[in-house]
Image (cartoon, rainbow over all chains, first blue to last red; front, top):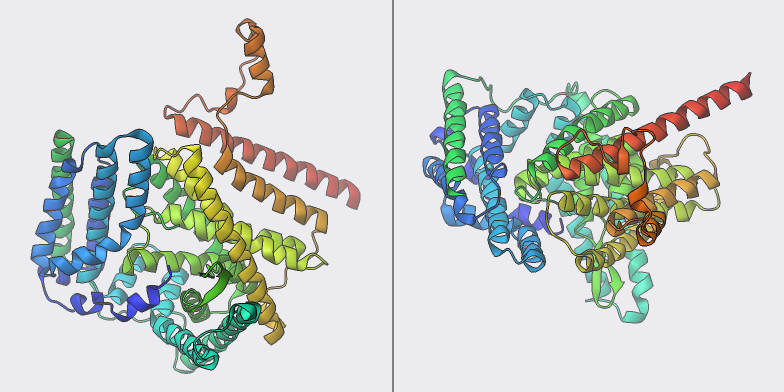
Length: 251
Length: 302
């Protein structure tokens, strides 16, 4: 999880999500349903050989072409998940000697991550969260998600500023004999950040209530599930079932 | 340890998604009781705090540093219900924005970190926070929240058929023990610092369950977590002796138990036989203890 904040700073997903392709125009609920269907198709294919996942890669490639997102950057973003499957693929290869199984595990994981990046690249996050709410996610959970997104950069920037200030005061680090002191200072800094976040949260809540907040964020734009969205979900289902049948033959 | 999609087998991720839903639902109900209308931004900002806290490093020696994971700290400050919701929200955002963990594996990650991690962190604190062993309770909370989460993840990977020898599990256990110790120490340091700033920010558990009960529960969580990592498939002492003496073949069945050899025979998959039998046994013992406990309380109050 470390470094998420820094990665957030260079986030391109928001920029991509402002596009106007066929996928961008679909209702968030339809896109979530499409993604889940795709992921289930990938996940239910036994990892017998990496080549078995070729049909779903083709389905993903079609989606990417329709969306107009840049392949190298999407591939690079999805590569973030690779350490975990690489580690367990390597372990399973060492233990069982089955390199094909290990490679298939890695491919399966990576293709799933590519699909998630595609969804995020064609759907603005606020719309996606409203989509979750529309699909039955608890209102409180969705509101917490919206609040985290809203205040994440603010609190993270505050934390980074505090860290920078502490580093300046230390003038480039402390000698080893002073480590307990550094430990105490780190915990103190975290406690101060906790307190400031807590107070900020209470202030934010009071300000929102003063402006008429009654416990629900407004949708970024009115979203209606149209017949084109139904066609999209049906298309996703057909593509996933077709790919799944092809994978069965290939595996 | 965020499990991505594609690693867990279908029965494991499907079962854990089904298991996570009511757990999170109950947490939402529990959190709503402690929050006033529309106070969700508080949870959101505290979720953002956890993200920020993970950017701040602590020196842990040998030229390395560690950082807070935050499940136990959130439980001790906002209560377990709110902590479960915040951690679930963080897991969803990590899966969507940072590709850290999968969407189909969200149930597994939520069970490991948001449910098991938070409750394993909360229970020792709840049991020991109002006595002389308070610091032990806080440390045990941080320590067990990480260890229990990691043990659950390892169990799920093994149930999914990812082959792991005892050597691999041993090395992983050492890493987890180190991480859990760091989490325990950071949780103690931060919580004490928060308490110095404003004691009102800490969630004070209601009632005093007693030191013995606290130690017992802490030990139970520790044994379960360690048991998952070091469980042996070899027969127990009596079975082994019976095999060596050659009398095992002479055994006769007097009564067909519903869960023979700790397995649920009506399930096909090997993993589900053991898992269902374990859960059934756990539920049964819990039910018996609850019933006996209530009867005793009624008798005493009468």
